[in-house]
Length: 478
Image (cartoon, rainbow, N blue to C red; front, side, top):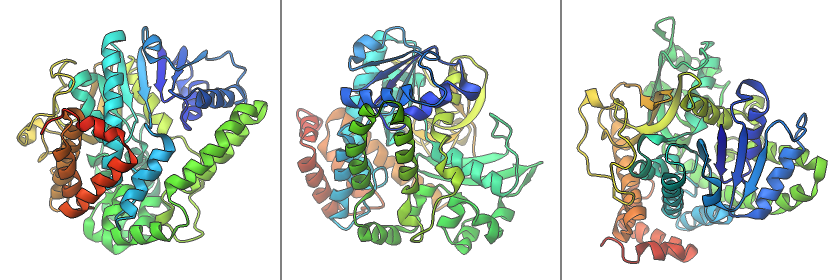
């Protein structure tokens, strides 16, 4: 299988390569192509791969290129993890919101909308090139915000695009470990999870036919053993009756998160930007030391993840620092899509429980249709449109990903899901049709903004930071 990674100069690419040359995914890929717009980043990443312990450079052929159209023919699988504007763009996503007194986070709230607006057009370009040069290839999307980006691509690629994120699956695994519930490899029987990307809840965890989640939530000591259990007060979780995805910290503890971020000397984006600006040239010149330098930087970066939610001085658990979630989800999905047997994973895909239609049913730049809420029998998450992209357990085979029916969310969870989905669809409409009015409404409707006045200031700030946004509006929908 020929795998092309769009964003091949990305910091996490060595995690994928490491999994491809050792362990249970060894042999899955016979050729790896790294595509990136930045040749210097490609040089740095290939240096890391060449210096990886146990790698003699011959077990998996690697080709690096800046020519996407030339690299796509013959490709079986495309894995996308791009960041238009680089880490400098992330800094602006965070800072524009933070300077208006709002949450400054790259995928949640205002920053996530900005990130999506400038990312979706690039991902649509990739999807159109795939339709032309490798129409039978699958696109596994990790490009953030993963849910919105995946929803924008469905009209172009149909069922041949799925979105992945390691956050939801990580929550399930950590909760199962804390509850001492063994999870069979590739199965999510007895697991209840519903949501959107970075906005979901684990509401059921069965062991031998009995839901043990209430017992776990009642056990304050067990909750302290994993990240999501520590993020939220035990009485709050007891009242909720579910375990929230870690990104719901920004909703449930909004003021605390905002204050903690403002108290930091640098934003998360500024820290990562500074690290990578210094690191990449060193990697390219490090020779056999490149992997060691990268691994040290990776662990440091993992240590800073969600630092605003932890007491000062508290370190993440060793298993969280070790890495492994990101590439495991991607490669497990790829193996199933390539015919390696079915598996079950929490993925971003259409809410319809029946398989999605073929690519090309909608025009590439058509806005998502305003679909009425689907009957419960037709939707994995009752209360959300069947054609909306949601994040739920799915069965993945060579035919694609089919979501598993979930329990109907109750208020206030359903209301939050519906409102954020509305925001996501407005953002997709803005990015695909050039509607500035839709972008403005998306900012205003987001629960973490909730203000037309702030929405106008946010959009003006992002337009100043990213002049290319103005080009999206030129000739767009009014």
